[in-house]
Length: 155
Image (cartoon, rainbow, N blue to C red):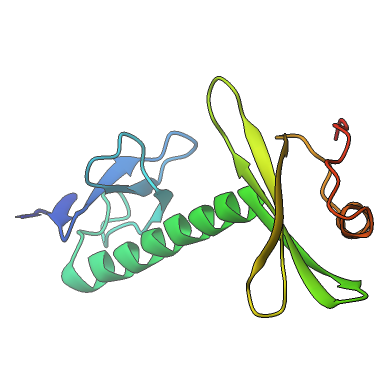
């Protein structure tokens, strides 16, 4: 635990007040322990002398931790949403949930297209290209085909 005017390290986070490269002001960088890059860099308030930065304090640090944590949470949600998509389609047997789950393997990325009934029972699962174009129409066509393996299409 470090509590200095320009450096606070506590609760798994480090706040460091730094010179703003773009102007005469100051910035604060929030870095999660174990990470090499800050999760958040933002402007920091000038002190009373209008030359030096305002010292970090408990309240400011708590606000910075909350904000930086939210930035990380939103980033994780966006990453998850990019890799996992779903839609519901109508079929003669009721509504079918169709999901596309992308596996971003470094050497051979791929995706799995899967279908589930209303109670969560898996109806089908096929492996497709990671760049499979997943839309409501492509999901409907897959269900209508009886879950035949769709052709590999470029996105």
